[in-house]
Image 1: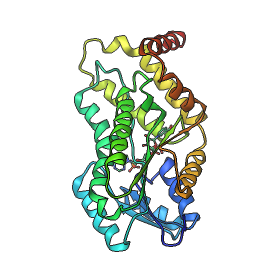
Image 2: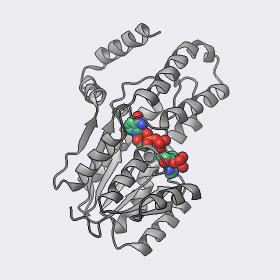
Image 3: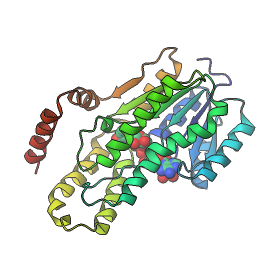
Image 4: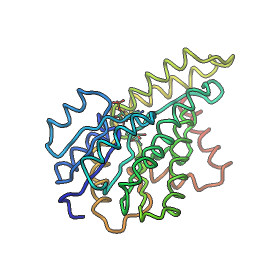
Length: 279
Ligand SMILES: NC(=O)c1ccc[n+]([C@@H]2O[C@H](COP(=O)([O-])OP(=O)(O)OC[C@H]3O[C@@H](n4cnc5c(N)ncnc54)[C@H](OP(=O)(O)O)[C@@H]3O)[C@@H](O)[C@H]2O)c1
């Protein structure tokens, strides 16, 4: 792709994968509209590279998406690549999670990305949409099933969108394994708060599993794959004339992809075996 005048919009660029990708793309010569929600994040990103313009966008708010659209519309004729990156992780046993918590998960990871596309369609002719999905879309991970389901739903909806759309828009799903970013710490904080709010009689029976998941999440924050692996793959996808519909990042993501194709009873036995082993 000729980088001159090529425009990228990326949501959730204040930290982690979004920030690293915005910086790499700006450094590579693209004009980057970087989605943020705080003034300090806008100032910080814009000070790091002159090709970056911060755009206030909360993808769960239609008025915020509207304002972001008109801001971008006034500053560019088209978007060549939209990266739906903004995301959160809601964790906990299905029995105890409130419907509001599960909705919050879908509102950001699934409906937020769709809402952005709906609004920005006039700028997206012939564009690429790169969705930061997850290996969790394989649906293999209990206690983070709202997150898994939100990413699977994202992939299903956008795969249909790719087949259906009349604007020559390509869709690519990037499915990373555990990447070292702030999302892990944030999800642990959220899970702790949610646990206090649980209103189910079985709450205490899940304590061992929840502590295990928490430990695992905090480890991922330390031992996860370097975020550059994802940003560099995104750059490669942007520069490719013929990208694949889906990319796994990291061994665990390839493994999850493979295991998810086994019969469900076999998958469940494997997962229960590992859960019992690690108790
Ligand atoms: N880290 C991993 O292991 C991993 C693996 C697979 C997939 N992913 C996916 O990668 C994406 C980026 O996550 P990350 O790991 O880089 O975590 P992160 O550092 O926590 O970044 C998440 C970004 O999303 C933004 N965000 C959250 N809610 C938003 C909303 N309602 N509207 C707009 N922006 C919002 C955050 O902005 P604020 O700072 O304003 O909250 C932040 O910029 C997510 O979709 C995540 O599911 C991550």
